[in-house]
Length: 238
Image 1 (cartoon, one colour):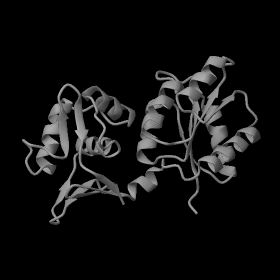
Image 2 (cartoon, rainbow, N blue to C red):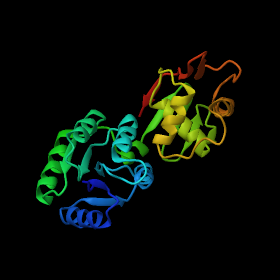
Image 3 (cartoon, helix red, strand yellow):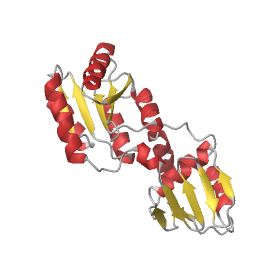
């Protein structure tokens, strides 16, 4: 059985290291980050089973990061806060956190809450390890998530750039949903990826040349005038 992975995000080094040591002692695999950017890098490279997230982070705060994570992933999140403000707790739960723990906290109580959430959310679809073992099928293509390549039904393999991989992942997780250009950029930020180096329209146009039978009359990524784009192909997860 694979060891469950917990990400601790707190700008206080002592708290990060104390939690790391305590959770390691209780059999968890632990990653730590000091800010939202560090948390996104860790989530993108090896998505955890649960996140312990401080509300008062420098720069982007924990509430905003929680909202971004829950828009794209189904990872259990426990917010940690040194403030007694009830509003933080309510807002945190409203944006998708699974629990809220006030500082200072008893490590045993926190561990009990973690175990309870793990039991309750077991089987939720949020692990990047399982995501990377998946293949997607659409139209005449099979997408290998781990290797970041597409295989056509005639055996032709197409390698994807980082931007194309990001774009395809966004679409595959939201088939038949109209996404505005602004929403696509927002989702790329939330994924922790770099900003697209060109406009969304240019990204889509280049990508269509790789996957469409006729890029001028696309069947897979269709333009919705005044709305944005929709991934119109049927998607199967394998």
